Length: 250
View 1 (tube, rainbow, N blue to C red):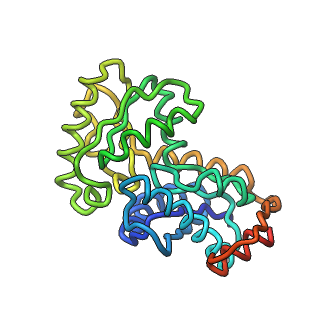
View 2 (spheres, rainbow, N blue to C red):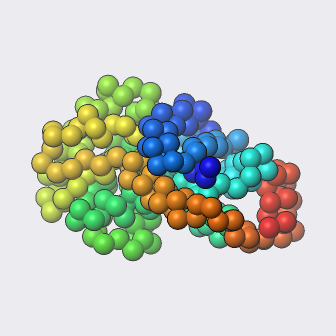
């Protein structure tokens, strides 16, 4: 059975469990196996530029460890809304790699101009920068941040729903041309549904949007051997044995 790997570049096992809870029924209904890998070092939940940089390394390390233990998946969904390490994974993994932010932004933009609601002010410029790199069919108009991080929102979903509703309402008023609101962040998975009907435009779940892209990528390769991965032989120093072997061996 083909596998879709959810790769959490945060070290939070709670966020990984949240992602699996919301992703497993969708992935299994598509006839795929769901696997999850969690970062072995780095931030518990990424809240800024330094955390994102470290998480990029952690994502590569977690993927290499997963491949050594279980073999390569059919596709990877990098389950952090900042997509740390996305381009490095894509260049070396040898299988399709989808980013939570990239895939969900592209899907949200099919509704027309859109806004993002997320946790943590540091993400505002980071997400604007990421959006400028993506071929979106409609523009990202703005990013509205609530003061709590995604991890804090995930830990208290009842309070998170009201915070996110207020932020989404403010975002639609601030950018009236918006046609959709995208909840951005792995910790916000599952929080769009309670907001349905409370705003004049669709409120979109970043995980569910990205899952559709990941499932399609995995299904497209069903029954075919994965292509060779691309080695990057270094020399390397100080990496985990799994990551060093994976980069050098290809």
